[in-house]
Image 1: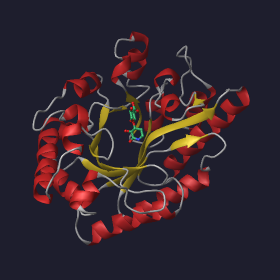
Image 2: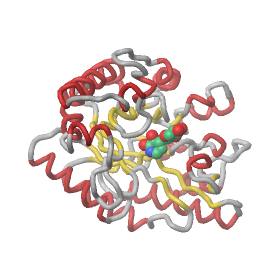
Image 3: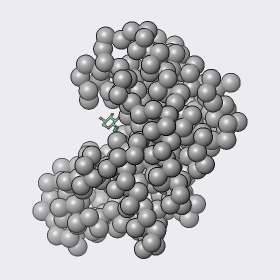
Image 4: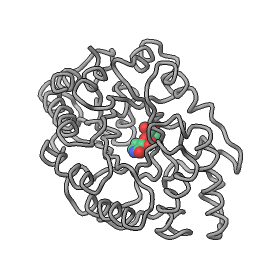
Length: 318
Ligand code: XIL
């Protein structure tokens, strides 16, 4: 059976994958990507980011996301929608604008209102805000922080709650929070503060972009998940991948397989970690080689679309 079938049997809601638009013409890839026994959930890698959704002001374009979302709906795959507010992949009109607080608040609300009305109720979850903190726990610099102050985060969650359906989970999503450290504690403090002040938040996404040799252990990931769950939010591993410093070797692939399995198991073993999403399943389309030169082979399937040790390790642990 595929990974999603096993994941559901193990009590998770889904095992999913990100899909990018660059591979839509590869039918061998697509037949795996939209095979709902393998992947019960899909996240568009890029199509729901601001620069593609609202390339010029108040001009909305959903075709790139739809190329992934529509086949996912037909295949009855759940969707995680990604992402309303981020510092990256913003259009020039937005990032280069000289905004007042009132104007930028209007731009934010208009964006969330439109995109939420288009996709909103069809998403299991929305990553409302992505990567708002630095590793030292300080607020990451962005147009949002500079113009709106740190309140932009709660503003985005309030707008999201206003415009997406009641049942859609609203997530804060970040990397580097997969163990107990300064950053994950700051995120947990934000969750607590939001709950105390009735600001809507339903989940924390731990991206889980890991590196062989430096990845958190099973205990690390479990402890991180347990920082959030007692606060009353659910969690998920939202972008799992495990990069290898090249050249690759069978030894490194065995270590990679362990990291995949340990992370998946940590999610299975805590209450309210709802699912695991890999940030693509195919090595050649992973974001890793271009983002981290010298690293690669981060996924479950190799260049020839053959299942790797990592795939079988996940399948065994589920
Ligand atoms: C990445 C995509 O995979 C790339 O194709 C794109 O060029 C940059 O963004 N954290 C996130 C994702 O939340 O949106 C990022 O996706 C990877 C890191």
